[in-house]
Length: 150
Image (cartoon, rainbow, N blue to C red; front, side, top):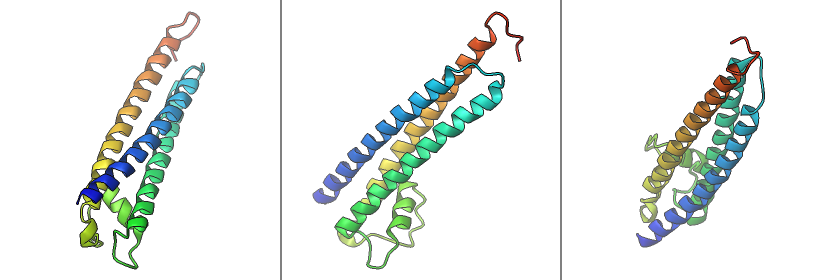
């Protein structure tokens, strides 16, 4: 059981690092885009949010792939199982239960789910903050002298 927890903690730490890099990337893109003056603030906001969500989605997919590699290395699922599907089901906490880990690795699913919940919450916080900051910036642009309040 200790090995399962150690492996799960290690993979979670790797994924937290990936998510931290994705956060820095997404926030820097959002900041750069947010500093632009625009005549179409609604389209601009949509673009910033779509780009941020896309970057975070890529990060989540990479994180699932780290779990896939781990499942394969430790042989956590029965032979012939679709590891990508198994990892996505666990990471997203969907929990179909049609593939279950081998008994020696039965904690790997809950550890994956715990990691996924944490990182999805983090992504939601990033999206909210990017939205808040972009709206704040767009409102500041609207208050500039010479703007007609589009």
